[in-house]
Image (cartoon, rainbow over all chains, first blue to last red; front, top):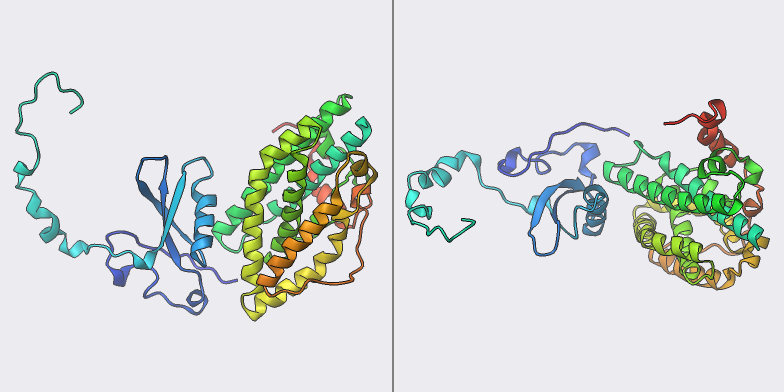
Length: 121
Length: 245
């Protein structure tokens, strides 16, 4: 069998540089798709992204996630979604997207005088 | 009665140990990282069950035996594992099919053992049954995936059936100690056959008919495979007696 080491990108990587879509060799074209895994660590908490894995279908992805990511009682619920369905913001647009918030300190609730009785703020 | 209980407990222990050892051979060689972890997880589950049974057997024997001496210092003819579990891994399909045949059997057996009058066996079965339920789910989905997959995977599953079916008859052939322990293998056989037929139907695989069935493992008469397994499994303790990790 012919294996290649290959780097995959996640998150804020533009699609054309991301894994999967532009990567097609003969061996890989028939390979299983990549899935992103989200685990809820206990009831009432959010599902958090924990990583990704390969699987042929959703059922297998959940079972793989169970075996790879919940071996040490990390979770009570698993979500999986095929990586190709995740759309990420473009790092090239970071300036226009995030910088404008820099000088808008009034959006932080830091201008209130808190009474001493209020704890945990 | 005690003798039958010891032999039966050893039969359960040996079967889970040998299958664990076989599956562990995949460690680092699985077809894909996630499945490598999955089969190794199952291997560890089975090893945990084997330890429970060996510890119980050692306590029953009460002659200085330990779980280690029972696993590492008994000879081939003393092992009472099923022939099915000592068979070679073959390709992934063959490993999967062996796991499915066994897990489906073990699930039905443990469901029965949960009600057994021997409290320790019932307790071990109750603890293990959650794992086994998952093994059945995981392996049966693989059987369906490969059987109803490509021509290549379908043919490989046909070959796997050819290799393994002849060892399935023994699962339901009661040894003396099983009869003495009141294990009802007839009802298990019926349900097992129904379940396997349903999975095979979905996998578009034929259920073999009128195959000559091998047996003997429960009585210590094994295929040549077991010798090779024990050679590797017991090498360290045989060569360096009492060696500790």
